[in-house]
Length: 179
Image (cartoon, rainbow, N blue to C red; front, side, top):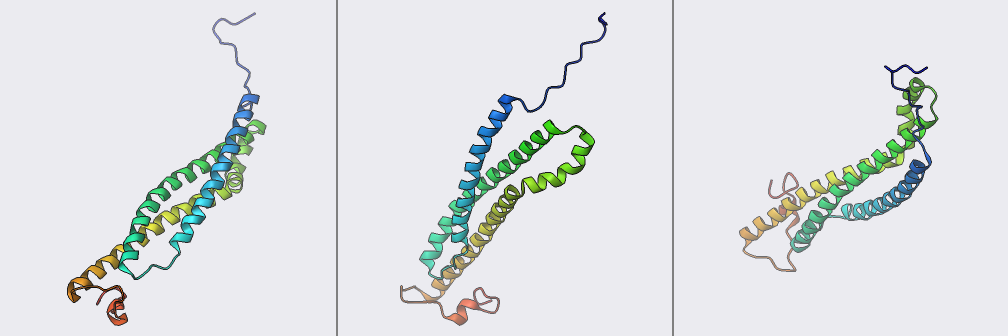
């Protein structure tokens, strides 16, 4: 006999069903591709970032323009890396939840397991975030150097292609200008 006041209990379905596994597989392959592309782009921009900053005013201005583009792109890269980290975490939790018998046991070891499982995504996210901050500092340095060159030009009355700023004036007491 059925109790009319109670709704029948639905059997808890596994979080992992064939459609979800197929979707996860597709997402994993596309996210793996995104991860590898992002890592390659990070390495490329990092090569640019570690190059020595030139002292030639024209090259400084050119590099400042490049840094504008790289700053914008690295901001997008931070968002993509965060997405990849979130998706890897979600995937791991969904896979573990489907096999867990005891939710308490799952939650105890989950944090450590997630950190291990997502370590490469976390590394890329942290690296891209640091790259973004580094580009900001590079831009500040470039702007300072361009401003110094402008000041030097206004004091000396010109700039020839063969001229360089004398070392003593270039460095000053604080490393910038006449300090």
